[in-house]
Length: 276
Image (cartoon, rainbow, N blue to C red; front, side, top):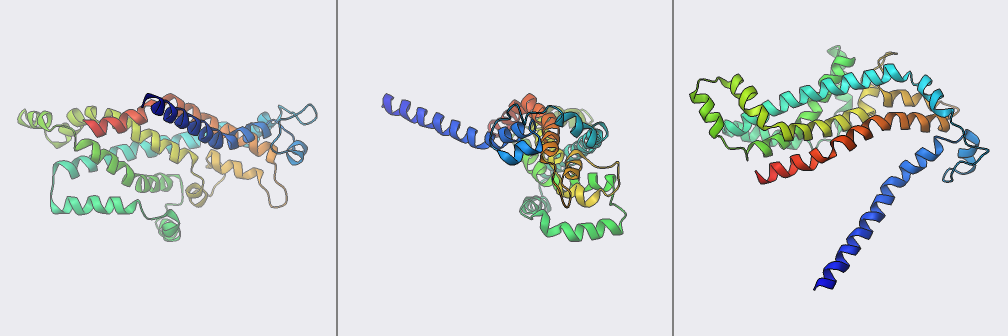
């Protein structure tokens, strides 16, 4: 029996290593090509750069072409503001749906869950028509759209967590004279810290990397996020794969660092919500 467990453990480890290599291989190719010139990429896209094709100039050129500081600031502001609003709206909505149980609350929760099943492509054209009519084709409109698309999943995550939080503290605070607003921000929010971090991480990663929605909503120079600016390397008649590879790495690095710093909170938030 012991040998069987050891064998299964080895098999799981080998499968994990194989999957890790499979998922990391495209990133490795991107890193290698970011240090090649155009000739080196066309000659051998999968190989390591050699003395004739290696160049460190791709990163400075990509940094300048992306207008990196401004594009980074645009991505950062849109991501942070959208995530904070999603956290506020979804946590309040989930708390109300859990604590004030009625037939309407059950229906509303089902509607939020069903909204996750609707692909963005199905609502893309109507959304753009409505956004244009309401003059929301700008950065403010983009943030509002992100809040709309991000709340469904976030409400479901908060809902599952709040259901397992005991009500005694809230009842005691109510007896002491707290109104609903004080009850939520003083008593409830501190108990939601773990799941808030988890929801924030997931939304930050999604919003930061999103290309499709900003490409439809942001239509003025100087407003573009980092994923939008990388499109500049792909022209109608030529594609600068060398600069594009370096530019994509510059876009990826901030979110990878963010994820590595916060990854433990994702597992912690999910497990805490399951066992409390």
